[in-house]
Length: 238
Image (cartoon, rainbow, N blue to C red; front, top):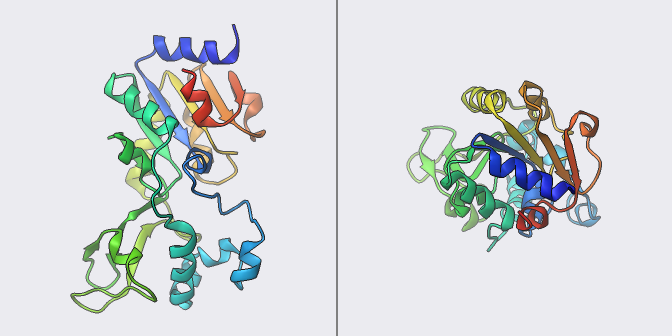
């Protein structure tokens, strides 16, 4: 039995699957992983992505932050891929209990998933830092410069977790619960290098830990099944 067949068997037999995904899940939808620096940043921006996407940078150089954010984090016309749709299908079938994602693009919800833990927030939610008014994606995407609240004139901030900021406690707690209770834990499209998110998988107690990634991860030796490949292509075969 090959890896795909074994994974298919585990999925068919389980009604308590949890999926943990990273940037690789979205790259197949055309969203670039900003960590794979392509040289473009050096030509266009004076700072590395990790610096720009920090709380300090947002507060000090808000306009430059938004120039990068609109250009690199808000990609027009992206649609869910096979991985997103397969996970939503499993949820409808009662097999998948939840998706835990490091991505901020909202593609899981677009595909139909309901139980989605967004560890790093979402570009679809934005709030005024002064009065707390809520704004959708368009409030950022349709403008230029620093977006300001139409009610009070305060600066609007994306509900995404920047470097130097902590993760949401409720989201972490629910993610821990899902992982701890899972029968099958599938991790896809992540090298498991970003903490504290990567540490969440230590709460898994089962014996069906599946790692799907194009390259080696820090946890390959801990997995019960390792599949090398693109997450969308692997899920298409299930």
